[in-house]
Image (cartoon, rainbow, N blue to C red; front, top):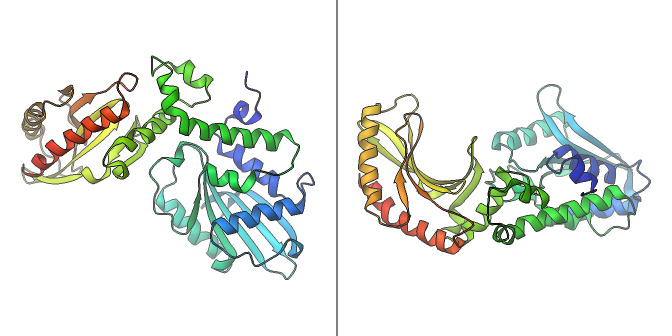
Length: 350
């Protein structure tokens, strides 16, 4: 059994990572000398392309404040306050994510509220977004002044110190193992005959099921000629990889609809989103559906079928089923690209 405390407690818990960084930087922690703490800070500043205007001897105190709160208004995962001998205070404002991405409004609000609340100069605060898991490969919003650190950058900041404590060593090893899962997902997929063998993935440290598919999608999109146009995120009930440039607005029966394309688990799906306040009728949707199904059936690429005739805001129209275990990724994405090349122009002419 894995005895790494990070994995035992739960790698996916942001508080675990907050706690370790708090322990590493806290001024009262004599296990990590001030020289080591300063080096961690110096690396962060350097990677943010910011000048370090203070030296190790200039620091009088470092205070770490997990779940820093603006009353009931907002909480920040970790704020690090660096008190200098000249009375100036420097801040690291850190949001941490493992398998999710913050909303753009959260980053914008945190940046604005912190500066206003602490009444500090902008040059005295650095805003950091640490991504510890599949958040590394998911859709990133506008950062609004935050500097993004994925696991390789986080390791560059915090690894390489002579700290003979299991807290530190287990955490660094857990980060390295997570990055191996990200880069090794394709090989791990090849080594199982059943993608849905949950125990297999858990034994290798993966979190099922959304994170497994996020990492699979991250590799899958590399084999598309549209590799930089695919966004990975949660579709609430399923993991999604959406073709960002494929959203197409049309007017049907004097009402607005949007066509879009996405992977749901192993299926590649053409969908239509209806205007929530002014939906076309079910009858009109069924007529539209029949036209799209006829168009998709004419492609003769891959194994596709029409979906059930449901009526809602988000409606699947046609679906191509894939087996990620039995098909090579480049073969799948070559086929998907051909489907898009054929159908998307015809959707535009509807």
